[in-house]
Image 1 (cartoon, rainbow, N blue to C red):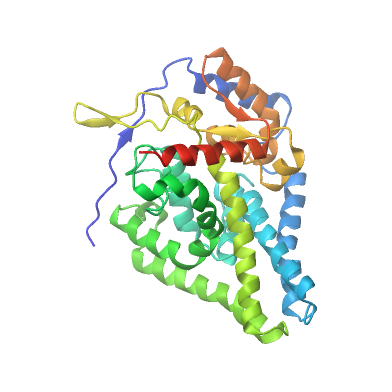
Image 2: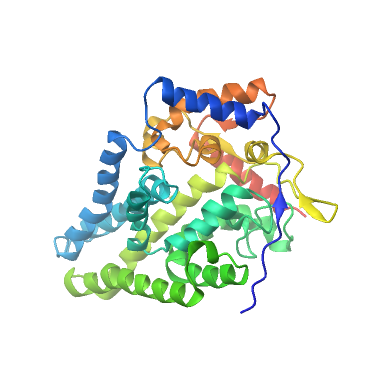
Amino acid sequence: MKAEKLPIVRFAPRGADSFYETVTGRVAAYFKNNHISPYANTAMWVKTFFMLLLYVAPYILMVTGKAAGNYWLYFTLWFLMGWGMVGIGTSVMHDANHGTYSPNKKVNSLIGHILEIVGGYSVTWKIQHNLLHHTYTNIAGLDDDISSIKLLRFSPRQPWYWFHRYQYLYAWFFYMNMTLFWMTAKDYLQVVRYKQHDLLVKQRVSLGQALFRITMYKLFYYAYILVLPILFSGMPWYLVLAGFLLMHFTAGLFLSCVFQPSHIMETSAFAAPVESEGKSRMEDSWAVHELGNTTNFARNNRILTWFIGGLNFQIEHHLFTGICHVHYPKIAPIVKSTTQEFGLPYYEQETFMKALLLHAKMLKLLGKQ
């Protein structure tokens, strides 16, 4: 398979005394002056235990037949597992694969492999999220998070089709199926595409190794999530399948509703590279580009912030991927005041629902030719 590397896009130099240089210095001073580690604290480890328990405990009750014959309890357990998937994805796996639990890489790697336990593959996730999304946010053709199926248009720079005018209505169905698609076909499709773009090299894995590992992980996942419940839950196979779908629909819809309002908004710039001297360049520096394509929401909602791993502080997350999310509420005022000082945008919405409504509005705008 011949490798075809992705085009190299360079951002404008940040310059001396730049916004990024200033804000990183101020955030570093916050941790130093307060004698705080930017990694996980005790509260983070307690949360980790809770999120794992939210997924594992309902599973154990269900697979041991404790809910046999009680349909309400049975489907409630699957529903809770869906929320457990959300918690693991946003508050555990996400931080671990960004390396923010500990300065010890082995600790981060070990916790990051929880993704394989819930049906994913950490190698493709790191390429899609850490490399492509965080580097090229909202740049069509490079940010894999906006490179979706043809039925969904997430950028004004993507092709338009007549059916996109209805996407603000039907997008939610595809959001609901996000994790189900991920746990079945997405990892296979991605790893082949990433091999074609020569992106597996830095992950130190060959295509053959990746395909083998994905297959083994998927077999393990479907063995415990479907086969064991069919054998031991005391419920017929079709109810096991229904519970499995309920879990994924719950997790997929909510995760999408957390991710999408962070970037697919009317305020987002969706800037494209310009050709200069045979090279593709962005007019803004990387940090300024991130500010122009990212939105925070519900910063004062402590429960939501706790449960979704601070992903409502998306600006802070994009600028400081190496800092554990439990610190975002404290560094957010530093970031916001620095953006104001430099005359840069700091987009935020007061509530989660308002952010969702504005995202739906953006889907409708993107549906217009």
